[in-house]
Image (tube, rainbow, N blue to C red):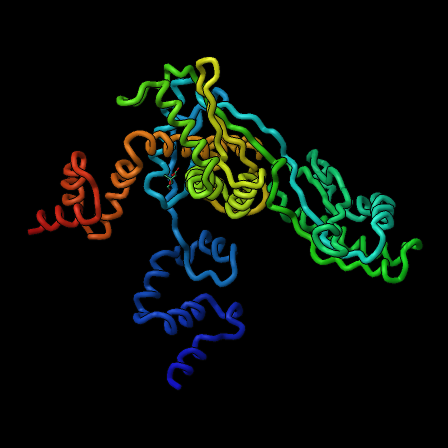
Length: 445
Ligand code: MEV
Protein backbone atom coordinates (compact mmCIF):
# COMPACT_ATOMS: atom_id res chain seq x y z
CA UNK A 1 0.00 0.00 0.00
CA UNK A 2 2.77 2.38 1.06
CA UNK A 3 4.79 1.38 -2.01
CA UNK A 4 1.77 2.15 -4.23
CA UNK A 5 1.44 5.57 -2.63
CA UNK A 6 5.15 6.19 -3.16
CA UNK A 7 4.82 5.32 -6.83
CA UNK A 8 1.75 7.48 -7.49
CA UNK A 9 3.61 10.32 -5.81
CA UNK A 10 6.08 10.12 -8.70
CA UNK A 11 3.51 10.84 -11.42
CA UNK A 12 2.72 14.38 -12.41
CA UNK A 13 0.42 16.17 -14.83
CA UNK A 14 1.41 19.47 -16.50
CA UNK A 15 5.04 19.24 -15.35
CA UNK A 16 6.24 21.40 -18.24
CA UNK A 17 4.02 24.24 -17.02
CA UNK A 18 5.70 24.42 -13.60
CA UNK A 19 8.39 27.03 -13.01
CA UNK A 20 12.00 25.89 -13.00
CA UNK A 21 12.16 26.07 -9.19
CA UNK A 22 8.94 24.05 -8.88
CA UNK A 23 10.30 21.41 -11.23
CA UNK A 24 13.49 21.15 -9.21
CA UNK A 25 11.52 20.85 -5.97
CA UNK A 26 9.24 18.22 -7.47
CA UNK A 27 12.03 16.02 -8.76
CA UNK A 28 14.48 16.37 -5.87
CA UNK A 29 11.94 15.77 -3.11
CA UNK A 30 10.51 12.66 -4.78
CA UNK A 31 13.57 10.89 -6.19
CA UNK A 32 16.49 11.74 -3.87
CA UNK A 33 17.33 10.59 -0.35
CA UNK A 34 18.88 13.98 0.25
CA UNK A 35 16.81 16.54 -1.69
CA UNK A 36 18.92 19.44 -0.41
CA UNK A 37 22.19 18.11 -1.76
CA UNK A 38 20.52 17.05 -5.04
CA UNK A 39 19.19 20.58 -5.37
CA UNK A 40 22.53 22.11 -4.45
CA UNK A 41 24.26 20.16 -7.20
CA UNK A 42 21.80 21.41 -9.81
CA UNK A 43 22.40 24.95 -8.55
CA UNK A 44 26.18 24.57 -8.64
CA UNK A 45 25.95 23.67 -12.30
CA UNK A 46 23.80 26.58 -13.40
CA UNK A 47 24.61 30.21 -13.93
CA UNK A 48 21.94 31.79 -11.82
CA UNK A 49 20.29 34.87 -13.26
CA UNK A 50 22.58 35.11 -16.28
CA UNK A 51 21.45 35.69 -19.87
CA UNK A 52 23.47 32.65 -20.82
CA UNK A 53 21.41 30.48 -18.51
CA UNK A 54 18.17 31.78 -19.98
CA UNK A 55 19.43 30.72 -23.38
CA UNK A 56 20.26 27.23 -22.17
CA UNK A 57 16.95 26.89 -20.36
CA UNK A 58 15.17 27.59 -23.63
CA UNK A 59 17.07 25.02 -25.70
CA UNK A 60 14.93 22.24 -24.24
CA UNK A 61 11.77 21.66 -22.24
CA UNK A 62 12.07 20.94 -18.52
CA UNK A 63 15.67 22.14 -18.16
CA UNK A 64 16.75 21.92 -14.51
CA UNK A 65 20.46 22.63 -14.83
CA UNK A 66 23.40 22.23 -17.24
CA UNK A 67 25.38 19.12 -18.04
CA UNK A 68 29.01 19.97 -18.68
CA UNK A 69 31.44 18.15 -20.96
CA UNK A 70 35.09 19.17 -21.17
CA UNK A 71 35.98 21.10 -24.33
CA UNK A 72 39.53 20.45 -25.48
CA UNK A 73 41.57 21.56 -28.46
CA UNK A 74 43.78 19.37 -30.63
CA UNK A 75 46.49 21.43 -32.33
CA UNK A 76 48.90 20.64 -35.19
CA UNK A 77 46.46 19.32 -37.77
CA UNK A 78 47.53 20.07 -41.33
CA UNK A 79 44.53 19.66 -43.61
CA UNK A 80 44.89 20.49 -47.30
CA UNK A 81 48.07 22.39 -46.44
CA UNK A 82 46.31 24.55 -43.84
CA UNK A 83 46.94 24.47 -40.10
CA UNK A 84 43.99 23.71 -37.83
CA UNK A 85 43.45 23.44 -34.12
CA UNK A 86 40.36 21.28 -33.72
CA UNK A 87 37.80 21.77 -30.92
CA UNK A 88 36.64 18.53 -29.31
CA UNK A 89 33.98 18.06 -26.63
CA UNK A 90 34.27 14.67 -24.97
CA UNK A 91 34.42 12.97 -21.60
CA UNK A 92 36.82 10.23 -22.78
CA UNK A 93 40.27 10.83 -21.29
CA UNK A 94 42.41 9.62 -24.19
CA UNK A 95 40.64 11.24 -27.17
CA UNK A 96 42.44 14.59 -27.21
CA UNK A 97 45.83 13.03 -26.54
CA UNK A 98 45.27 10.54 -29.39
CA UNK A 99 44.20 13.32 -31.75
CA UNK A 100 47.27 15.38 -30.87
CA UNK A 101 49.63 12.43 -31.45
CA UNK A 102 48.15 11.57 -34.86
CA UNK A 103 48.12 15.21 -35.92
CA UNK A 104 51.82 15.53 -35.10
CA UNK A 105 52.71 12.23 -36.77
CA UNK A 106 51.03 13.17 -40.06
CA UNK A 107 52.00 16.86 -40.00
CA UNK A 108 55.59 15.82 -40.72
CA UNK A 109 54.42 13.52 -43.53
CA UNK A 110 52.44 15.95 -45.67
CA UNK A 111 49.34 16.24 -43.47
CA UNK A 112 45.80 15.17 -44.30
CA UNK A 113 44.05 15.75 -47.60
CA UNK A 114 40.30 15.67 -48.10
CA UNK A 115 37.70 15.54 -50.83
CA UNK A 116 33.95 16.13 -50.74
CA UNK A 117 32.37 13.27 -52.70
CA UNK A 118 28.79 14.56 -52.42
CA UNK A 119 26.45 16.74 -50.35
CA UNK A 120 23.07 15.21 -51.15
CA UNK A 121 20.51 15.05 -48.33
CA UNK A 122 17.44 12.86 -48.62
CA UNK A 123 13.88 12.75 -47.32
CA UNK A 124 10.71 10.80 -47.98
CA UNK A 125 6.97 11.00 -48.03
CA UNK A 126 5.98 7.46 -47.04
CA UNK A 127 2.51 6.66 -48.27
CA UNK A 128 0.06 3.85 -49.04
CA UNK A 129 -1.63 3.66 -52.41
CA UNK A 130 -4.07 0.85 -53.16
CA UNK A 131 -3.99 0.86 -56.94
CA UNK A 132 -2.00 0.25 -60.07
CA UNK A 133 1.66 1.29 -60.02
CA UNK A 134 1.57 2.99 -63.43
CA UNK A 135 -1.30 5.22 -62.29
CA UNK A 136 0.55 6.56 -59.22
CA UNK A 137 3.64 7.03 -61.34
CA UNK A 138 1.69 9.11 -63.91
CA UNK A 139 0.07 11.05 -61.08
CA UNK A 140 3.39 12.01 -59.47
CA UNK A 141 4.85 13.07 -62.85
CA UNK A 142 1.71 15.13 -63.40
CA UNK A 143 1.87 16.99 -60.09
CA UNK A 144 5.65 17.65 -60.00
CA UNK A 145 5.20 21.33 -61.00
CA UNK A 146 2.62 21.69 -58.22
CA UNK A 147 4.95 20.04 -55.70
CA UNK A 148 7.54 22.69 -56.61
CA UNK A 149 5.13 25.64 -56.61
CA UNK A 150 3.51 24.61 -53.33
CA UNK A 151 6.94 24.66 -51.63
CA UNK A 152 8.04 27.91 -53.29
CA UNK A 153 7.81 30.00 -50.15
CA UNK A 154 9.70 27.39 -48.10
CA UNK A 155 12.52 27.07 -50.64
CA UNK A 156 12.99 30.75 -51.62
CA UNK A 157 15.87 31.50 -49.23
CA UNK A 158 17.57 28.17 -49.83
CA UNK A 159 17.36 28.67 -53.59
CA UNK A 160 18.85 32.14 -53.22
CA UNK A 161 21.83 30.48 -51.46
CA UNK A 162 22.22 27.97 -54.31
CA UNK A 163 20.34 25.05 -52.76
CA UNK A 164 16.83 23.66 -52.72
CA UNK A 165 15.00 20.57 -53.93
CA UNK A 166 17.18 18.67 -56.40
CA UNK A 167 15.14 15.65 -57.51
CA UNK A 168 11.74 14.13 -56.80
CA UNK A 169 11.25 10.45 -57.61
CA UNK A 170 8.60 7.88 -56.90
CA UNK A 171 9.80 4.57 -55.44
CA UNK A 172 7.62 1.49 -55.64
CA UNK A 173 8.25 -0.40 -52.39
CA UNK A 174 5.34 -2.83 -52.77
CA UNK A 175 7.73 -5.81 -52.92
CA UNK A 176 8.65 -4.97 -49.28
CA UNK A 177 5.19 -4.02 -48.01
CA UNK A 178 1.78 -4.15 -49.75
CA UNK A 179 0.67 -0.74 -51.13
CA UNK A 180 3.80 1.03 -49.85
CA UNK A 181 5.23 3.77 -52.07
CA UNK A 182 7.52 6.64 -51.26
CA UNK A 183 8.36 9.98 -52.71
CA UNK A 184 12.14 10.00 -52.56
CA UNK A 185 13.32 13.60 -52.54
CA UNK A 186 16.88 14.84 -52.64
CA UNK A 187 17.98 18.24 -51.38
CA UNK A 188 20.97 20.55 -51.41
CA UNK A 189 21.05 22.47 -48.15
CA UNK A 190 24.38 24.34 -48.60
CA UNK A 191 25.70 25.34 -45.14
CA UNK A 192 22.78 24.15 -43.05
CA UNK A 193 22.18 20.60 -41.90
CA UNK A 194 18.73 21.29 -43.29
CA UNK A 195 16.53 19.07 -41.12
CA UNK A 196 13.80 21.69 -40.61
CA UNK A 197 13.93 22.81 -44.23
CA UNK A 198 13.68 19.23 -45.52
CA UNK A 199 10.89 18.22 -43.15
CA UNK A 200 8.86 21.35 -43.97
CA UNK A 201 9.13 20.63 -47.72
CA UNK A 202 8.17 16.98 -47.18
CA UNK A 203 5.12 17.80 -45.05
CA UNK A 204 3.94 20.21 -47.74
CA UNK A 205 4.46 17.44 -50.33
CA UNK A 206 2.31 15.15 -48.20
CA UNK A 207 -0.51 17.73 -48.15
CA UNK A 208 -0.15 18.37 -51.89
CA UNK A 209 -0.30 14.67 -52.76
CA UNK A 210 -3.44 14.20 -50.68
CA UNK A 211 -5.15 17.26 -52.11
CA UNK A 212 -4.25 16.57 -55.74
CA UNK A 213 -5.13 12.87 -55.55
CA UNK A 214 -8.74 13.72 -54.72
CA UNK A 215 -8.94 15.82 -57.91
CA UNK A 216 -7.09 13.39 -60.17
CA UNK A 217 -9.63 12.05 -62.65
CA UNK A 218 -7.86 8.80 -63.68
CA UNK A 219 -7.95 7.57 -60.03
CA UNK A 220 -10.84 5.42 -58.81
CA UNK A 221 -12.44 6.43 -55.50
CA UNK A 222 -10.26 3.95 -53.66
CA UNK A 223 -7.13 5.20 -55.41
CA UNK A 224 -7.96 8.79 -54.50
CA UNK A 225 -7.76 7.86 -50.85
CA UNK A 226 -3.96 7.94 -50.51
CA UNK A 227 -2.79 7.51 -46.92
CA UNK A 228 0.19 9.71 -46.07
CA UNK A 229 1.85 7.72 -43.30
CA UNK A 230 4.75 10.09 -42.55
CA UNK A 231 7.04 12.72 -44.01
CA UNK A 232 10.61 12.78 -42.70
CA UNK A 233 14.23 13.22 -43.73
CA UNK A 234 16.50 10.21 -43.73
CA UNK A 235 19.67 10.06 -41.65
CA UNK A 236 21.05 7.53 -44.11
CA UNK A 237 22.97 9.93 -46.36
CA UNK A 238 25.42 7.78 -48.35
CA UNK A 239 25.78 10.54 -50.93
CA UNK A 240 26.60 13.25 -48.41
CA UNK A 241 30.08 11.84 -48.28
CA UNK A 242 33.58 13.02 -47.54
CA UNK A 243 36.98 11.35 -47.86
CA UNK A 244 39.96 12.17 -45.66
CA UNK A 245 43.30 10.55 -46.34
CA UNK A 246 47.00 10.42 -45.61
CA UNK A 247 49.86 8.73 -47.40
CA UNK A 248 53.61 8.50 -47.24
CA UNK A 249 56.43 6.20 -48.36
CA UNK A 250 56.41 3.02 -46.27
CA UNK A 251 59.94 3.69 -45.01
CA UNK A 252 58.69 6.87 -43.30
CA UNK A 253 56.32 4.82 -41.13
CA UNK A 254 59.27 4.24 -38.86
CA UNK A 255 57.94 5.18 -35.46
CA UNK A 256 57.93 1.82 -33.74
CA UNK A 257 61.08 0.37 -32.20
CA UNK A 258 60.08 -3.26 -32.52
CA UNK A 259 58.45 -3.41 -35.95
CA UNK A 260 60.12 -2.44 -39.22
CA UNK A 261 58.17 0.20 -41.22
CA UNK A 262 57.05 -2.49 -43.69
CA UNK A 263 55.96 -4.85 -40.87
CA UNK A 264 54.14 -1.97 -39.12
CA UNK A 265 52.18 -1.08 -42.29
CA UNK A 266 51.34 -4.72 -42.98
CA UNK A 267 50.14 -5.26 -39.42
CA UNK A 268 48.11 -2.05 -39.62
CA UNK A 269 46.38 -3.27 -42.78
CA UNK A 270 45.79 -6.66 -41.11
CA UNK A 271 44.02 -4.87 -38.25
CA UNK A 272 41.64 -3.30 -40.78
CA UNK A 273 41.22 -6.68 -42.55
CA UNK A 274 40.19 -8.15 -39.20
CA UNK A 275 37.57 -5.41 -38.74
CA UNK A 276 36.25 -6.21 -42.22
CA UNK A 277 36.10 -9.92 -41.39
CA UNK A 278 34.51 -9.69 -37.95
CA UNK A 279 31.60 -7.50 -36.84
CA UNK A 280 32.67 -7.53 -33.19
CA UNK A 281 35.97 -5.94 -34.07
CA UNK A 282 34.42 -3.69 -36.75
CA UNK A 283 32.00 -2.09 -34.30
CA UNK A 284 34.81 -1.30 -31.83
CA UNK A 285 37.06 -0.13 -34.65
CA UNK A 286 34.36 2.27 -35.88
CA UNK A 287 33.54 3.33 -32.32
CA UNK A 288 37.13 4.57 -32.16
CA UNK A 289 36.55 6.55 -35.37
CA UNK A 290 33.41 8.05 -33.82
CA UNK A 291 35.38 9.11 -30.71
CA UNK A 292 36.96 11.74 -32.93
CA UNK A 293 33.94 12.43 -35.13
CA UNK A 294 31.43 12.94 -32.30
CA UNK A 295 33.74 15.16 -30.27
CA UNK A 296 33.97 17.69 -33.12
CA UNK A 297 30.34 17.26 -34.09
CA UNK A 298 29.27 18.07 -30.50
CA UNK A 299 31.69 21.01 -30.16
CA UNK A 300 30.31 22.51 -33.37
CA UNK A 301 26.67 22.11 -32.28
CA UNK A 302 25.74 19.39 -34.76
CA UNK A 303 23.50 16.38 -34.31
CA UNK A 304 25.79 13.52 -33.28
CA UNK A 305 22.93 11.00 -33.16
CA UNK A 306 22.21 11.64 -36.84
CA UNK A 307 25.90 11.35 -37.68
CA UNK A 308 26.26 8.12 -35.65
CA UNK A 309 23.20 6.50 -37.25
CA UNK A 310 24.31 7.50 -40.75
CA UNK A 311 27.89 6.34 -40.27
CA UNK A 312 26.91 2.89 -39.01
CA UNK A 313 24.32 2.42 -41.79
CA UNK A 314 27.03 3.36 -44.30
CA UNK A 315 29.43 0.87 -42.69
CA UNK A 316 26.79 -1.80 -43.42
CA UNK A 317 26.09 -0.82 -47.01
CA UNK A 318 27.60 -4.02 -48.44
CA UNK A 319 25.23 -6.08 -46.29
CA UNK A 320 28.00 -6.77 -43.77
CA UNK A 321 29.09 -4.26 -41.13
CA UNK A 322 32.64 -3.19 -42.05
CA UNK A 323 35.44 -0.78 -41.21
CA UNK A 324 34.95 2.86 -42.15
CA UNK A 325 38.70 3.17 -42.72
CA UNK A 326 40.86 1.54 -45.38
CA UNK A 327 44.58 1.16 -46.03
CA UNK A 328 46.83 -0.15 -48.82
CA UNK A 329 50.50 -0.44 -49.68
CA UNK A 330 51.10 0.22 -53.35
CA UNK A 331 54.46 0.90 -55.01
CA UNK A 332 56.07 1.40 -51.62
CA UNK A 333 53.46 3.96 -50.49
CA UNK A 334 51.25 3.48 -47.44
CA UNK A 335 47.83 5.03 -48.10
CA UNK A 336 45.18 5.26 -45.43
CA UNK A 337 41.74 6.84 -45.71
CA UNK A 338 38.17 7.11 -44.46
CA UNK A 339 34.95 7.62 -46.41
CA UNK A 340 32.21 8.80 -44.08
CA UNK A 341 28.75 10.31 -44.61
CA UNK A 342 28.39 13.54 -42.62
CA UNK A 343 25.27 15.69 -42.75
CA UNK A 344 26.55 18.80 -40.96
CA UNK A 345 25.67 22.45 -40.75
CA UNK A 346 27.53 25.62 -39.87
CA UNK A 347 24.42 27.81 -39.93
CA UNK A 348 21.01 27.17 -38.38
CA UNK A 349 20.21 24.94 -35.41
CA UNK A 350 22.10 26.08 -32.31
CA UNK A 351 25.21 27.12 -34.26
CA UNK A 352 24.55 30.83 -33.82
CA UNK A 353 22.94 30.48 -30.40
CA UNK A 354 25.31 28.42 -28.29
CA UNK A 355 28.30 30.61 -27.40
CA UNK A 356 30.70 27.65 -27.13
CA UNK A 357 29.58 26.36 -30.53
CA UNK A 358 30.29 29.79 -31.99
CA UNK A 359 33.67 29.74 -30.26
CA UNK A 360 34.47 26.36 -31.81
CA UNK A 361 33.40 27.51 -35.27
CA UNK A 362 35.51 30.68 -34.85
CA UNK A 363 38.48 28.50 -33.92
CA UNK A 364 37.99 26.61 -37.19
CA UNK A 365 37.85 29.89 -39.14
CA UNK A 366 34.04 29.83 -39.52
CA UNK A 367 34.03 26.96 -41.99
CA UNK A 368 31.43 26.15 -44.61
CA UNK A 369 29.53 22.91 -44.05
CA UNK A 370 31.84 21.25 -46.59
CA UNK A 371 34.95 22.41 -44.74
CA UNK A 372 33.48 21.18 -41.47
CA UNK A 373 32.80 17.78 -43.07
CA UNK A 374 36.50 17.66 -43.99
CA UNK A 375 37.70 18.55 -40.50
CA UNK A 376 35.35 16.02 -38.86
CA UNK A 377 36.44 13.22 -41.22
CA UNK A 378 40.08 14.02 -40.43
CA UNK A 379 39.33 13.86 -36.69
CA UNK A 380 37.78 10.40 -37.20
CA UNK A 381 40.71 9.13 -39.24
CA UNK A 382 43.23 10.54 -36.78
CA UNK A 383 41.48 8.84 -33.88
CA UNK A 384 41.40 5.49 -35.68
CA UNK A 385 45.08 5.86 -36.59
CA UNK A 386 46.05 6.44 -32.97
CA UNK A 387 43.97 3.47 -31.80
CA UNK A 388 45.30 0.99 -34.38
CA UNK A 389 48.85 2.20 -33.87
CA UNK A 390 48.63 1.52 -30.14
CA UNK A 391 46.69 -1.72 -30.53
CA UNK A 392 49.27 -3.31 -32.84
CA UNK A 393 52.30 -2.11 -30.86
CA UNK A 394 52.23 -1.29 -27.13
CA UNK A 395 48.56 -2.23 -26.61
CA UNK A 396 45.82 0.24 -25.80
CA UNK A 397 45.86 0.14 -22.00
CA UNK A 398 49.24 1.78 -21.47
CA UNK A 399 48.06 5.09 -22.94
CA UNK A 400 44.48 4.75 -21.78
CA UNK A 401 45.28 4.08 -18.15
CA UNK A 402 47.82 6.89 -18.06
CA UNK A 403 45.09 9.27 -19.18
CA UNK A 404 42.62 7.62 -16.81
CA UNK A 405 44.98 8.08 -13.85
CA UNK A 406 43.59 11.55 -13.15
CA UNK A 407 40.02 10.20 -13.05
CA UNK A 408 41.05 7.55 -10.52
CA UNK A 409 42.92 10.11 -8.42
CA UNK A 410 39.87 12.35 -8.44
CA UNK A 411 37.70 9.46 -7.30
CA UNK A 412 39.99 9.12 -4.27
CA UNK A 413 39.85 12.91 -3.79
CA UNK A 414 43.65 13.10 -4.05
CA UNK A 415 45.20 16.43 -3.13
CA UNK A 416 47.37 18.42 -5.55
CA UNK A 417 50.59 17.11 -3.95
CA UNK A 418 49.33 13.53 -3.88
CA UNK A 419 48.43 13.83 -7.56
CA UNK A 420 51.89 15.05 -8.50
CA UNK A 421 53.58 12.30 -6.46
CA UNK A 422 51.46 9.62 -8.09
CA UNK A 423 51.82 11.01 -11.62
CA UNK A 424 55.59 10.78 -11.09
CA UNK A 425 55.33 7.28 -9.66
CA UNK A 426 53.17 5.97 -12.52
CA UNK A 427 55.56 7.25 -15.18
CA UNK A 428 57.38 3.95 -14.59
CA UNK A 429 54.60 1.72 -13.24
CA UNK A 430 51.46 0.19 -14.70
CA UNK A 431 48.31 2.10 -13.79
CA UNK A 432 45.37 0.15 -12.39
CA UNK A 433 42.62 1.10 -9.96
CA UNK A 434 44.08 -1.02 -7.17
CA UNK A 435 47.69 0.03 -7.88
CA UNK A 436 46.64 3.69 -7.53
CA UNK A 437 44.68 2.92 -4.35
CA UNK A 438 47.68 1.09 -2.80
CA UNK A 439 50.12 3.89 -3.62
CA UNK A 440 47.75 6.49 -2.26
CA UNK A 441 47.29 4.50 0.96
CA UNK A 442 51.07 4.30 1.33
CA UNK A 443 51.40 8.07 0.96
CA UNK A 444 48.52 8.74 3.31
CA UNK A 445 49.80 6.41 6.01
C1 MEV B 1 38.09 3.24 -27.18
O1 MEV B 1 37.22 4.32 -26.87
C2 MEV B 1 38.25 3.11 -28.66
C3 MEV B 1 39.07 1.88 -29.12
O2 MEV B 1 38.50 0.70 -28.54
C4 MEV B 1 38.99 1.86 -30.61
C5 MEV B 1 39.58 0.61 -31.22
O3 MEV B 1 39.65 -0.45 -30.57
O4 MEV B 1 39.95 0.69 -32.42
C6 MEV B 1 40.48 1.97 -28.62
